[in-house]
Length: 315
Image (tube, rainbow, N blue to C red; front, side, top):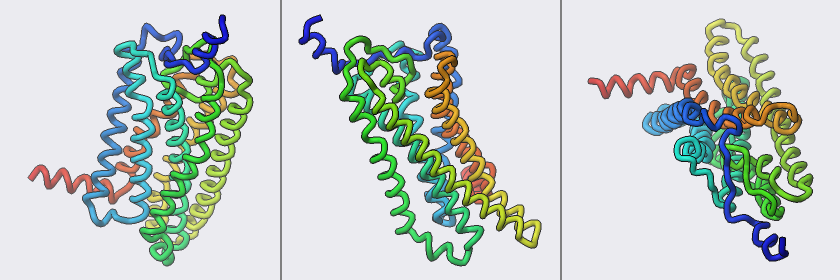
């Protein structure tokens, strides 16, 4: 191969996304649960945003953070699912090189944002349970806005080196990615270079952020549960537990699939490729679907506001 041809293909114009390798025949059937989960996620998160916006009694820090989570969930799932469904339904597997790196960036960025928002929500719950008298003076609207900005900046800056490094590697042998979207590790594996710098940085960020966030959340909930069980009245303990129990369950729905996906990608060499891809999709699809369901069912204020809305519409 001549030097000019090698140079031309070092930065390919497009990548080819295969979908779920080994399950191509079942793509149409697999698209049914994918589409259903995505539709539920979109409808549920838009409902949360709508209810909080129209109900003045929900204009509080806890619900502002919940709206941040709903926005991020919508962006996270929308960054991958439409392209995935195009692959399943129409076999449109091509994706522009720059678009692929952009998708990789946003998937990683929004994932870190979800983690950061869950930390903030744990802190909000801690303040509400352990320091209720100081809650309104500390978590003002300006503080909430600054916290949201800090979560966005943290995620955006930490993830930015990943696509920048990925753009530097040559891709002159193959441009086929065995995945449904431009997952960071899947993209790096088709590069024809020593990618240890990119791989080690991505792994370090994932484990560092996950470790720090899980530690903060764990400490918060230890203090919260200690405060809850020290309450004298049983009904007060139950109310506090129901309020923060939904936060804790949401944390588990995000953390467990996230860690499992990272570990299987990095250390599960004997795990079938199609299982890797399915787990990576479950990690991005299922939490955005579950979050509004959990909060809609377990948060009394949201549930009552939703019931009042439908009652008014029906009269």
